[in-house]
Image 1: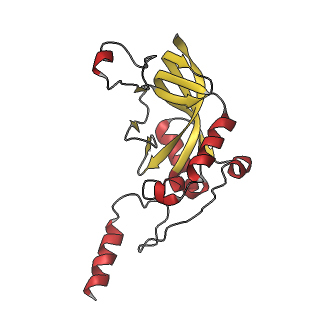
Image 2: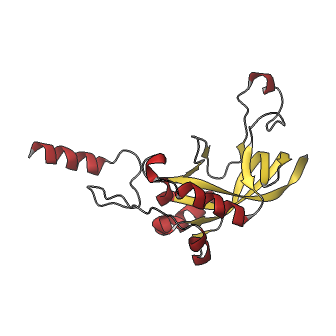
Image 3: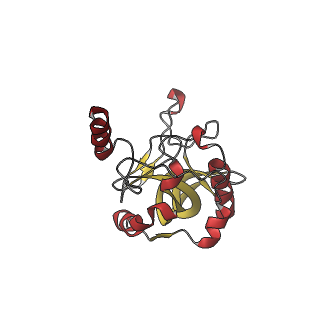
Length: 187
């Protein structure tokens, strides 16, 4: 179906410093204040807008929040070694997303042509950045409610310790850690 008015779905993102939301499974970045458009990688679908009935393309979202929270719990309940480093759960953002354009409805969710976050919640690890994320994306962003925290209980909680002592901004290469590692090797 083609929708001009958005429907609301639920999804999760990984927060990438300084201010980007990204899909957990791939490198798709949600650029602040710009709609995201689904693209299909299959050559025979290139002339039609995504999503396609016979494909897996599209912007995914669950219909209901409890289903999303259950999925988050299942993902982060796995051994952390199976998650992309650094530990993705420390930078988790989830919330409502507006979906419109071509939308395919499934049992638990949707695949859409266009999307943009509507309202966001941050895990406690990035709580200090909630206001900043909301400002950058132009949508409300709050700290995860305690009821959600109970739903998203991580079975194996490991908070990495970094040589620089940073907790919130440590994503990918860290110049402070690099220098501290070099100084430690010299001495």
